[in-house]
Image (cartoon, rainbow, N blue to C red; front, top):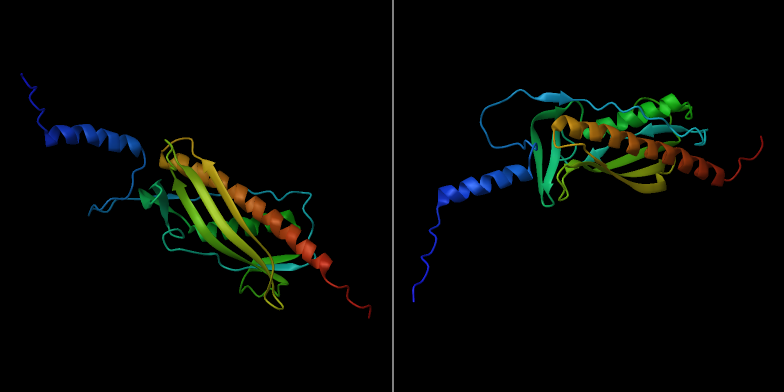
Length: 225
């Protein structure tokens, strides 16, 4: 009986077949490699215009914003991307103009100031005697492929509204939003971050006003002088 001869394994041929598949998986991802040469980076500066809901309650109290905290890999000038669930990399040749924590704080500060619904709001240490302070833990700020052909700008943060006089937690909530990018190009991913940052900031601002107002109404009435 004649037996068919085994097909020899050719490493070079296999490499030629596998390489396009790997490139297709991360098409346009342009992840940071271990190359030695420095290259000029494009600086991206998302600038969402966030409008607070007109029906949100107007505050009778003052607010300070603590600097958001986050892991170094997330709260960084490098733009984080997650090509697979267990892997976190950064885009090559692209950086943020400000760290994600600063972007969140700046967008929220401007949104609340422009709304006119808070008598005084400032960053912590600015000299404002605040009734409440907002503490933010930045958990995710990354482009997540999540098995799809294009990533989603994924933002997750945990916020605590704290009463300044006794450091008691008035309210706490986790905010999560994944904004799909229109493609894999870095500029399209940044556009998704701009939209996602606007959505999360708007939700956060409305929540702060609602929770602060609810807490003030629950406080015992001050005796008349």
